[in-house]
Amino acid sequence: MPTKPFNVLESFRLDNKVALVTGSASGLGAAIAIALSQAGASVACHGNRRAATETAAAIGENAAAFRADLASTTGAEDLFTQVKEKFGRVDILINNAGTIHRAAAEEVTLDDWQQVLQVNLTSVFQLSQLAARDMIPRGGLGTNCGKIVNIASLLSFQGGIRVPAYAASKGGVAQLTKALANEWAPTGIQVNAIAPGYFATTNTEALQADETRNRQILDRIPAARWGQPEDLAGAALYLSSPASNYVTGTVLTVDGGWMGR
Ligand code: NAP
Image 1 (cartoon, rainbow, N blue to C red):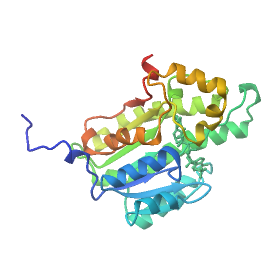
Image 2 (image 1 turned 90 degrees about the vertical axis):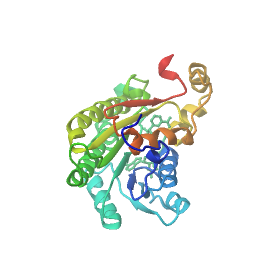
Image 3 (image 1 turned 60 degrees about the horizontal axis):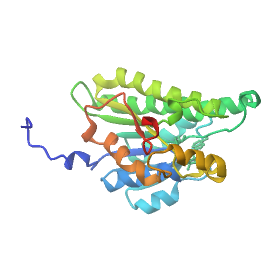
C-alpha cells in the first residue's frame, strides 16, 4: 500500500507551476508548451526569429511570448531575465531550442561549429544554471523544487552523417544532463533528457524531402512512421511533473523503436 493517499493522475498536474519552453514557436517545443499548459502550468514561450506569439495565443491567458537569440552568449540571461520579470519564477525548464548545420566534416567552418555548440549545448548549461539558482532557494533534500528537461537526440548516442557539430552538441547534452542531475539531486531538482527519434518538423525537412534518406529512415524505424510533435508530449509532461520525482539523470528515447533495433 502507498505510504500516504496517492492518485497517480494527480501527480501529472502542474497547477501553479511556471514553465519556460525554449524554441516553442514551432515543432516539438510548441507541442510541449501546449501539453504543459493543459496540465495546468503557466508557460513562457520562447522564439528566436520571432517571439512565440502563436503558441502563446493557442494557450491563452496563462502564457506569454518571448524572444531571444541563444546563439549569442548573452541570450540565455536576456531570456531568463524577461521571464522572471513577467512570471517571477521558473519551476520547469525545457531546453528544447536547437539548430543543425549539415555539411561534410572537412567543410564545417569554426563559426558554424561554434554557433551549433552555443545554441545546442552552451545555452542549455547557461539556462540550467540560471534556473537552478532560481529553484535552489525553494528546495532542499526531500523537496521537489524544480524540473529541467533537455531535448537531446538519437545523435546523443550515434554519430550521424554530415552533422558533426550537432552530434557533438547532443552527446554533450546527454552528459550534461547526468552531471547536473548528480549535483542538483540533493537540492530537489530533477534533470532529465528526452532523445527524440525522427520527427516531422522543420529540423528534418531536408531528410524528409530526400527520397532515398526518407525511405532508409522509415525502413529502420520499427513503428514505420515519422514521429509527430504530439508523440513527445506525454514524455515531456511525465518528466516535468511530480510523477517523475524519483527519476533523475536519465535520457528517455521516444523514437518508434529505433534504438532497440
Ligand atoms: P524546429 O521546429 O526547427 O525547432 C527548433 C527551435 O529552436 C525553433 O523554435 C528555433 O527558433 C529554435 N532555435 C534555433 N536557433 C535558435 C537560436 N539561435 N536561438 C534561440 N532559439 C533557436 O525543430 P524541432 O524538430 O522542433 O527541434 C526541437 C529540438 O528537438 C531541437 O533541439 C532538435 O535538435 C531536437 N530534435 C529534433 C528531432 C527531429 O526529428 N525533429 C530529433 C532529435 C532532436 P527559430 O525558428 O525562431 O529560430
